Image (cartoon, rainbow, N blue to C red):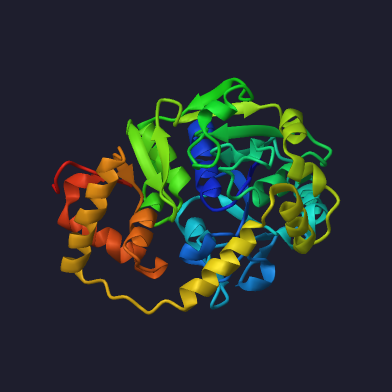
Length: 365
């Protein structure tokens, strides 16, 4: 029987969905993972999520839902990790399109349910910001999660809401989520992380990278994102909790506000009203700033010297790990250089690679 997993925020949530499906059901690849093509500026220089018109060679599933196969390509200059995910994993990745608001996402879900008749429907969020009220000062990216939550609460079928790695997205700390989390459905192990280990060698998701790292036993404090947010890596990191979806909706003011929206512009307007900002505005501003930055060369000797300074500063903050995305931005390199930087660091100092994270040590190893 087909299973449907909705990756609440797109990006790394889709990788975590594949990891969860393999852990719970084996790696038969029967799950359809419905996800946004929204990889942020590290992969896609265009702000906001991509829609079906931004790809070639998609495969129709229903009138409004398209599968993204390995042969698909984002139309330049757009970028997307989905075709490579489809090449590396056995699951079907279906494109969640937010451009018609919550009504459009609801329609996509209803069509899929009618077409697939899935044995189960899970809505998966890594980190737990789907449980945000909207006014938390640490909240950075509520829009995608609120939109999927609003849609899932309107379909005529039971949806199980799961939160993996509570607190790992660096937005809502675990202590703020503790009282809302329900029973533990699963605790990931090193074996569970294996099916996506090759994906995490190239995929830029920080939250899912930390999810896999904690499943492998990594503990400490990981610094992430361009702002250098500290994220605790604890025994709660590899856990997956079920959450009452109605309680989540009652908490999430943005999800309730956007329930009848018919465009992404409307969703953004409500996000500005409820949360005080739209994360796509942030991306627009950052993309504009990045265009003005001069190109930088990846000079190995200079990079390793700068890395030493960065690590010394990170140690003074109590940081034990970081991500290659954060190092890329901390060293003022562009997203296209992340993979080259990663290879340079691992080849130069292999003992500091705590897959898929970078370990901060007292001295270079």
